[in-house]
Image (tube, rainbow, N blue to C red):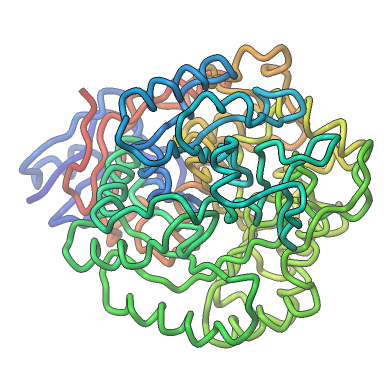
Amino acid sequence: MNILFRGGRAFTPKGVLAEAVLVRDGVIAAVGPEGDLSRQAHETVDLDGGLLVPGFTDAHIHPVQAGLERAKCDLSEVFGLEAYVEKIADYAANNPDKEWIDGGGWDMSAFPGGLPHRDQIDFLDRPAYLIQRDHHAAWVNGRALERAGITRDTPDPADGRIERDAAGEPTGVLHEGAMDLVGLLTPRPAAQDLEDALAEAERHLFSLGITGWQDAIVGSYAGSDDQLPTYLAAARSGRLRARVVGALWWDRTRGLDQVEDLLARRAAAEGLDRFRAGSVKIMQDGITENFTAATLEPYCLCGGTGLSYVDPDKLREYVAELDRHGFQVHFHAIGERAVREALDSFEGTGPANRHHIAHLQIIEPSDVPRFAALGVTANLQPLWATHHAQMDELTLPYLGEPRSSWQYPFADLLAHGTRFCAGSDWPVSNADPLQGMHVAVNRTEPGSSVHADYPTAQTPFLPGQRLDLTTAMTAYTAGSAWINRSPAGVIEPGRPADLVVLDRDPFELPPGEIWTTRVRMTFVDGVAVHESR
């Protein structure tokens, strides 16, 4: 079957061109003038003035967890304590047989100091475990604390913190590794639940034009179950249609003894068409808002320099061994010390394994040139680079200057020749790549955001770090596909026809309207997997 995409422009390696694209048997056969290609077409897709782009690849995402949360008490579509309590109460009333009230998606900025309290959900007749939107904390009620045996005398785990009031009593917020104290007690999803969650996530991602991704945690973390069996089953059965790489979780309580386990887990995916497990995820620190991001100098107002979850000296040894075995290393690094520790660990490795560092909220300026010099890709999550309540009220006051001005330095990285990929961290953030591109270009909140009306949301955040739309779109397409070793991500002959039809051409819009662009159709191997109604 030959399909001709015509009637608009295409985003190609040569630029945005007014060319038609011919697909033959699921592969891009030709890019050129419509007249030259129309005689070969059996079917036509009219772009209707929209833009044809490669399928997006999300280089840092958590789809199975997102799918599970959408089926539980999902707070991600509302904002504020009153709305959260109403949603939680409705969920409890509609699910009287559930032993726990679990789910998540609450936003720190909805609470004074970023901290909810157990009292706010102690009206529930069951234990509650609600994960923060960014998955670095959980909100629990008194019944959950009792179930876990957490009291004022319970020590903090080495990689987390139990939030306490002035009298030393647990308040109902568990940070980082402390989440497992309750999270591991919640009911375990059945295999079918996990398979359904993956299917729901894939459906949603196809609707946003995402045809491939790197799952940034394939393993057990923060109360979630290992997703590897789910991916293997979906890939073997043919149910998984997206092109996926799993980043296998590095257990920070273990050392090099786990490498053999990682090799076995990678081998389990060998020979599969749609899923590979060649990456390893190392979470080196936490987040700035709860002071667990690893910084070089103490936080303002509260002191402390955060946490390095893996000893930096041992980290070099671990990364060298993973590199030797051909693993790609995928870092979470938020604070400038964590970024430096990750870069230090890459010294002596080569570019062949395509290592990358995600998030990169704060980079000390002298470390910016090291990305290109070491061949390390910057994995961007652009949606966070705006003025919103979490940034202005919970981050900037504690970072101070000059550190606040070191945040999300996209333009500086680009100027030094850094390779980019991009992702969303969904369900931490909106999965829509076009919303991320809007922020990368404008450094302001998209009009669709729940934070769009925040007083400074339309004031550009560090505007000197803006990217142009071509660079941002390339990060979400060719850049992320390259990280995944995917043959897709580029519109040129010989590539798989993973393609997306946009309802308008964002390159012809004012920059402030990029966010209004929507996906009309998504194709994988030339087969439509999504059509908007």
